Length: 367
Image 1 (tube, rainbow, N blue to C red):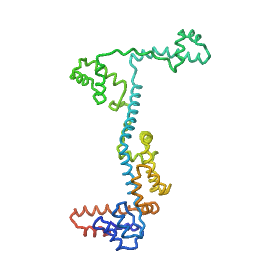
Image 2 (cartoon, one colour):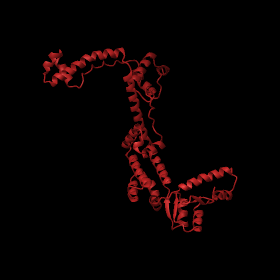
Image 3 (cartoon, helix red, strand yellow):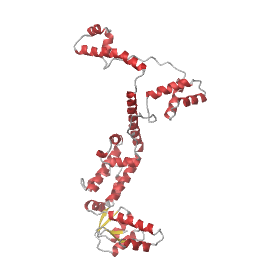
Image 4 (cartoon, rainbow, N blue to C red):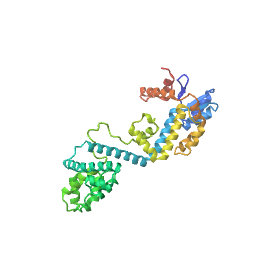
């Protein structure tokens, strides 16, 4: 389809997508000064042969779309790194949710007794710190608080009163099966009865209660993405973006992103420096094409050559004059896109039964 960009009217409809047809039409219509097109080789070659005097201008929308496709390929190449960063981000959120849940949970009777027992130790520690800052001697502090001098020296070396050491772990009948249980747990089996049945079927002589106690301690020890989030959390959990969405996030204005996405991108740029360089070069190209400001084309080509976007830049290098026209002239193929939509509507109204001659006639007729 050939469109007059000044009048926004269809000039002609060509029968095929061939460089020879484009060149022949242009030779029959001399005097054309500017040709706005996409990067298809068919149109580029036909325009050069048919109208060598015309200035070419690549369409800015198609340029940015090609850039987005190239960046998506680079993002897909860094999938393993992106997945690791996303997993770390999810683990942080789950741990924060677990901490909030634990903070909101009322203490058990055992925890209340422990806190009451340690309250006196914390009071002694606070008094020791006060006396030490006042210049009291170790012997004087020991007499004042009725503590042993060794205890005073040990406590002063710490930022908090040391807790009692845990008792030595006693071997149990479950020890030979802990690795198997952990593997089943990581695979997603969180049902203690199912875990116990699996061990018994494998020949283990154990009591299901032992497995139930192990599962309870394992669940309290740490959380993962399969654990439920607190019911009080009203906001949806952050989800890892898809490849297309990652490419969009990397090209978006950071001020328009939510905090979770910004933290994800900041971490991703640290873990994948090659991807960060490609995004920086892509952002410079976007500013150059969309806002027509910043650096020269030569500087951008030199920067892109040292990044994974080198292949994309090499393709643009072959059409540098047309790229310069996209930056320095106001022309684009936007009027063509509107006429293409109208052409599709005409084809639908004819139910696909009319030939090219009738379709061309209707396309050229003003409505």
